[in-house]
Length: 250
Ligand SMILES: NC(=O)c1ccc[n+]([C@@H]2O[C@H](COP(=O)([O-])OP(=O)(O)OC[C@H]3O[C@@H](n4cnc5c(N)ncnc54)[C@H](O)[C@@H]3O)[C@@H](O)[C@H]2O)c1
Image 1 (cartoon, rainbow, N blue to C red):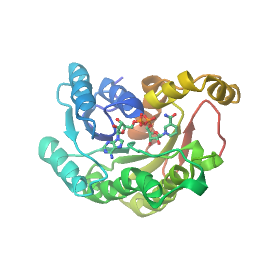
Image 2: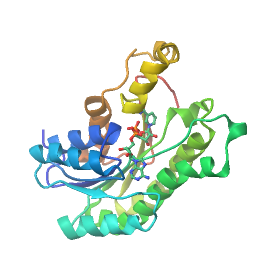
Image 3: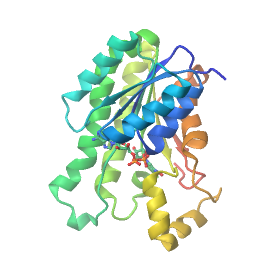
Image 4: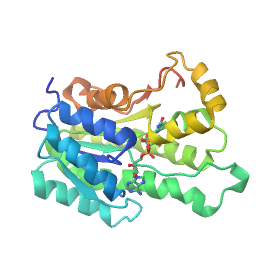
């Protein structure tokens, strides 16, 4: 089980939630990971745990909404490891509000923390990913595909990421770089909070999911990302994979 042996992967938002599940799945497959997060405390704790499995993994403390961090993240990765094989653009922040109440700042938040970092990190990473014929995995959401209530800003940013990813797949494909999107449903702290405080809403959503459970961060979501990061998916690009128990159909 060393599908990512000798690979170096950047995972944004790797300090907690789905990003941390991905990081755990990656190091167990032999990858050295660079987790990027603005939560310094969670990042330091996460890297201690990851380094017990893969001692060469590192944490970069950065707020992705500060666009000047994007080149630094790629440069530090290359200075440390000399290569880049996988870029996972997972981090995202947003506010849940009815469309009619959204301010410009609300609308900008998921773009500044999700869409723009995805775009700039892909731009800066491309020269290195071209050398390794690497993989980019971006994150969409069923909320964007379904048009979930109160998610207008988030849905717009997530569908923008999917459109960007399809163009990147076409432009990067001739250079051997693959670009795919995952739309997850995973047991992150946000989902756990929702299940605890709005159990009726949560159970109604769960009742419509064919597999009737929330995805495990490492074993369900993380392993799907391992597939898109490994040579097992070398003939797949420009695709969206729903890793959500069957809850949303493309
Ligand atoms: N959890 C789900 O079921 C679900 C469903 C659909 C889509 N998604 C998508 O999957 C991805 C991960 O989701 P999650 O639930 O684990 O999210 P989360 O909010 O639990 O974790 C996001 C991580 O990103 C970090 N982060 C946020 N903004 C940042 C910034 N500006 N700079 C640096 N780090 C930042 C946070 O500190 C956190 O560690 C996101 O793109 C999300 O939109 C999740």
